[in-house]
Amino acid sequence: MIEPCTFVTFGATGNLSRNKLLPALYHLEQAGRLPEKMAVVGIGRRDWDDEAWRREVEQDLASRARGGLDPEVFQRFRQRLRFFRGDLSDADMYRQLHDHLEQDPALPDNIAFYMAIKPADFAAVSNHLAEVGLNQETNGWRRLVIEKPFGYDLESAEILNERLHRHYGEHQLYRIDHYLGKGTIQNVLVFRFANLMLEPLWNRNYIDHIQIIHSESRGIESRAGYYDTAGALRDMIQSHLLQMLTLVAMEPPANLDAESLRDEKVKVLRSIRPIPQSAVHAHAFRGQYARGVVNGEKVNGYLDEPGVAENSTTETFCALRLFIDNWRWRNVPFYLRTGKRLARDNSLISIRFKHPPQQLFRETPIDRIEPNWLLMNIQPNECLRMELQVKEPGLELRAQTQRLDASTCRVGQYDLDAYEALLLDVIDGDSSLFLRYDEVSWAWKVVDPILKVWSMERDYIHTYPAGTWGPQEANRLFVRDDQNWRNTLDDED
Ligand code: BG6
Image 1 (tube, rainbow, N blue to C red):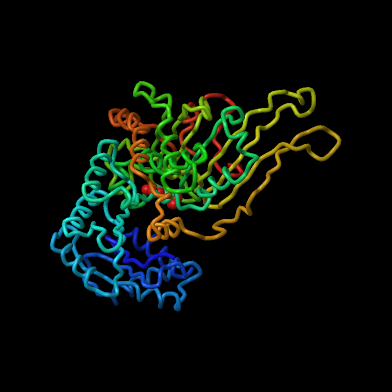
Image 2: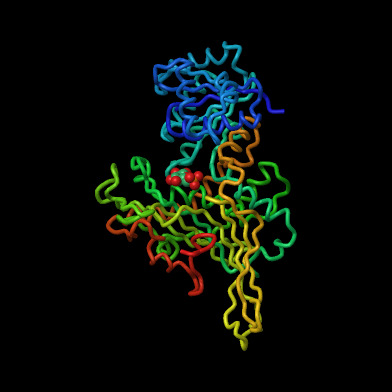
């Protein structure tokens, strides 16, 4: 049974809260998963009372609730909502918040604080909470939920971590990487460790290479302030794509508890072959979108986006080649690629197997056999697919690729948002799908040398027309000519 708690959201009127957190909580309400007495306290600067906030939330949910807002569900949900007016930089506000949380009998003792605010404010807000004793677990638990970016590089991540740890134990910190809440990502573990037949093949003897890609057709929208100082390597690869890589590459954990799982993920990150600064160009490629056409519409180049610095060399596209130096994976390339304003929205893990050792069909019309692929599509459709070679019907001995789909490949089949699973875990105290600090730190160690070199090379960046699959030159990362990007499940592009 999940204990009741008070879920306090800093930044309640911001985008993350409105677009992700509140809809996720509402959907959990709809699914009957929220503990009975749980309360949701939104903190913001607006001059609102509970009723005004409830009206705003209702309006937002009208367009975001799956299948439309259900009045009965909302009636239950709205009773949980409380608004607390306050300014994050005002030390007095935290004292008042403390008293409010202590004194209102409708607010359960356990408290989760969700930081839906600028990362630069994480340390200060958590410090203020501690000053008024809201970090102390004397009556009920206290959990702090923060979302990437965790720092800007290794050094700043360490400083942030040190500041958080002054007042909070690691068990109180929930670092969200929302990719870990996505259905297919969790399926990677089930698929790998609940099936016997894959395990003997899941290694350097049978796998040629692995690709992990995330492409988006949208640009940076109104996020130049953040994005222009971050770039694709920090924004997507340091967190989401490296997390996916750990799940694909890890050894089976001793059990499914949070520490065992995270121990195995850390081992993978620690085994990634460090990229010396002198080899950055051989292992990493960056690009930036120029104007082009996306879904039939002309769109701006990155430099024309509002808020982007005039001569910015921030990458909106990034590809890496990594190696994991352990028994299982030595010399198997892992290619990671991500970009904004690419041809399609898609996230895909592709595992390409080696060719069979004997060329048995050389003298037949089957002159070239396609290798086997195992594809795990994360979004927009969730799908597991295996590509095998079979004989074409007819008199000749010809081969064709057949696809075995282990799912129905429907878009949003279960329609669960990643945040739903993660928020439930926060209130349930299960930190398996949250990042431990050593994961964050080892992931920074992987990308830090690249960031350093790129930050010194500010006079040139390759460009690609918006709406394409990125610069051709990124293909130079492949170690062999027969390796190519697998852009989508069907790869018809
Ligand atoms: C975020 C990045 O973490 O993930 C965004 O900051 C990116 O730039 C987003 O667009 C992608 O997440 P999703 O769930 O939309 O694929």
